[in-house]
Length: 108
Image (cartoon, rainbow, N blue to C red; front, side):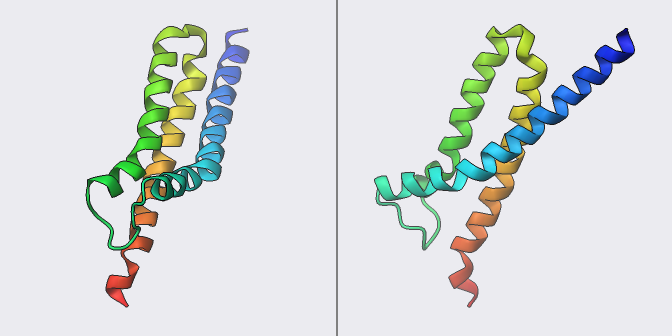
């Protein structure tokens, strides 16, 4: 019986990580671009506090909400951990790629 429970926990972890990747891939850049439009933050030249806040705010918001849910909702900790780690790592990778795209005119 415990072997079956371990398989379930591992599957839950992987599916929640996949959900974190998918949610981040579909929502992170639109959220960043909407914030940049709302606060009139230019994408070139990249830099400045407002530029970096636009890139960091969606990740900080999800991390904060996830951390609170992780502390409060004990039964969902495994799923939340998988989701949060995958979401944040995917967001960091997308942020690095977005910064390279924004700074590309420097190299042309």
